[in-house]
Length: 264
Image 1 (tube, rainbow, N blue to C red):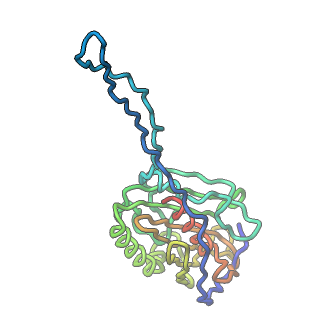
Image 2: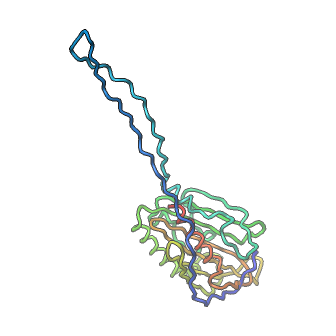
Image 3: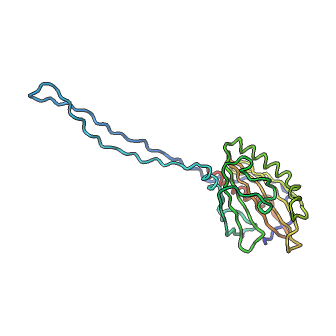
């Protein structure tokens, strides 16, 4: 289990991150054409001009233009955060196992404490998700799920659904099996390279086999146009002493936003 602590998240400071490098621009070379002109010759014995057969022109082939795969599946997959880039619970933390999967990730108390349904169920057309674990830490995990929506309007509507689920998450969590107590909940709004990200941190118990430990569950989402990434960062420990800017879910959403931007 990681060492992380009782909620000390009274700081409402918002944090902004700088955008990564911009995208490359593709240039398509136009096809070159070569034209042959007709020639006329006059024979001394025949005053009537005759037209010679046109000479065959040398074919000029243009390079096949490369196409940018902008399919929803590729975009959702490209938005996934590499294990080495996802923040952990301390500076030495390593996510040494990342399992990616295409398709709808089933929502369960083990994968999310706030979601009531999948991102596909609220309008997404494609989902791709990655589950991260650390060797020797069975209770500590993270999940990034990215969904591409038909258009920005649909994604915005889905974002409002996620906001409602976060506001009512504490009561929803209290009704889930195995949850005996739900502690303080803290909402965060943090600025990222693609706009504001929203997260909620909850503490609850009991932790099986450790009466002194508490579960700390951070969940949040960030949208870039018609794409949303949803992050869950879950761990068990006796404390959770982070400043706002250093909370794992806050740092993770900033990174997720950078990969959303890269996937355009």
